[in-house]
Amino acid sequence: MSDRPDAPSQVVTRFAPSPTGALHIGGARTALFNWLFARGRGGRLLLRIEDTDRARSTDANRLAILDGLIWLGLDWDGEPISQAARADRHAEVANELLANGRAYKCFSTQEEIEAFREAARAEGRSTLFRSPWRDADPATHPDAPYAIRIRAPQDGATTIHDAVQGEVTLQNDQLDDMVLLRSDGTPVYMLAVVVDDHDMGVTHIIRGDDHLTNAFRQKLVYDAMGWPVPVMAHIPLIFGPDGKKLSKRHGATGAAEYRAMGYPAAGMRNYLTRLGWSHGDAEFFTDDEAREWFDLEGIGKSPARFDFKKLDNLSGRHIAAADDAALLKEVADYLAASGQPPLTERQRALVEAAMPHLKERAKTYPELLEKAQFALTERPIEPDEKSAAALDAVSRGILAELTPHLRDASWERDALEGIVKDAAERHGMGLGKLAGPLRAALAGRTVSPSVFDMMLVLGRDETIARIGDAAS
Image (cartoon, rainbow, N blue to C red):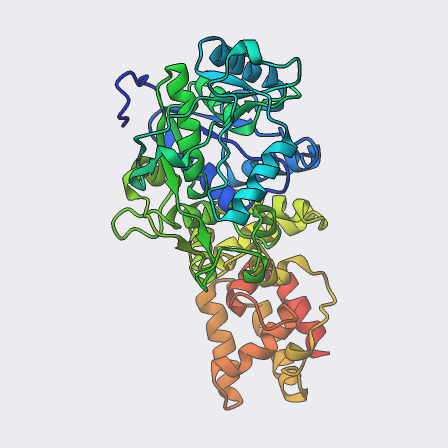
C-alpha cells in the first residue's frame, strides 16, 4: 500500500480545492479517487480549502465546492481546514529551516530578480535565479527586508516515485532555491502544502498530473525537514472528445452544471470513477464495488477523454437500477435544487406508482419527469401539437366507444389490452394505431409510458374521465 517504511497503518488522503472557482469536473474526479481509495481501506479523507489567494478566494466558491461534494455523495472526516488560517505554522517551519541552515536569507529585491531574468532572456541563458546571498557571510547582511529561500541541491538528480507515472527524475540543476517565506512574512503555497499534508498525517497524495512538477520542489521541503514523503499519485487530466483539455467549448465543465442537467449522483460517480481508471472490463458498478476494487494501479497514464454518450448510458442504467422510493426522493431533491415547484401529495403517489415504468430508458431526471407528465398534470389534459394530431374525428369516435367497455372491465393489464385490441380490430386497425389517440388522451404528449401502464397507474375513474374528455 505504501513504499514508506514508517507509513502508518491507516490510509489518509486529502482533497485540497482552491475556492477561486466552482468545483470543476476534474476536481470532482480527484475528490472521488481520494474518497474511494480511503474508504476502500478503512481510511480517512480530509478536506483542505487552499484559500491563500485572498484576492480570488470567495466564501461563495467555498460553499459551492462543499455543495458539489455533498451532491456527489463524497463525505469527508472532520471539519474543512483553511490553509490561510495556518500561515503562522507555515512561517514557523520556514524559520526552523533557516535556523538549522537548510534555508537562508535572501535580500535580492523583485526588481533585481526581474532585471537578471530580462538579461538572461536577452542573452539566451537560463532564467533560473541563483541568489547571491546563498553563501554570503551573515556579517554582510543589510538591515533590510528579506525572503527565506531553501537550499536546493545543485548537482545530482531528484526522483519522484509516483504510483501512477512511475519513477520521474529531474536534474537538480533545474531546481532553484525556492522562496519559502516572502519578504512581507507570508508563506508561499509550495511550503504551505507540504506543512499541511505532514501535519494532517496524509499518507497518499492523489492529485492531477499538472502538479507533478511541483512535487520536485515540495520534496525539497520534506527532505530538509526530515519528513517522510507521502505516496504520490499524479493522475492525468481530463480531455474533451477532441483530445484537448476539457473546457467550456466541449460542454459543461462544472459539477453543478451536471447536477442542474439532472444527472444522478450515482451515475456521475460511476462514470468519473471509470474515467481514467479501470477494473478489468467492468463498466457499470455500485459504490460498494468501486470502493472494493479501486486502486492506484488501475489508473492509466494517458489523459481520459470525456464521452457524453457513455455518461448518458451509465446514468440511465443507474436510474433503472435505483430503488423506486429512493429515486422519488432524488427527483424531489432535483426539483428543489433547480427551483421548480415540489410535487403535491397526489403527484408523489402517482409518480411513485409509475416509477417502474418511468425509470426505464430515462438518462436524466428531466427525461424521467417528461415521461411522468401524465401523472403530474390535471384534467382537462391539454395535448401538445404532435399528440393532438392523433385526435381526429375517427379516433375520438373510437375513444367514445371504449368508455363503457372500460367501465365494466377487470382493471388488469391483460383485460385492458384485450378491450383496446378488440376496438382496434373492429375498425380495421392495429393496436399500435389506436395507441396514439389513447396516449394523447391520457398524457397529452407522445413521450410517456405505455398506455396500459398509464391506465393502471391512473386507475379506472381518472382513465375513463380523461378518455371521455378527449372524445367529446
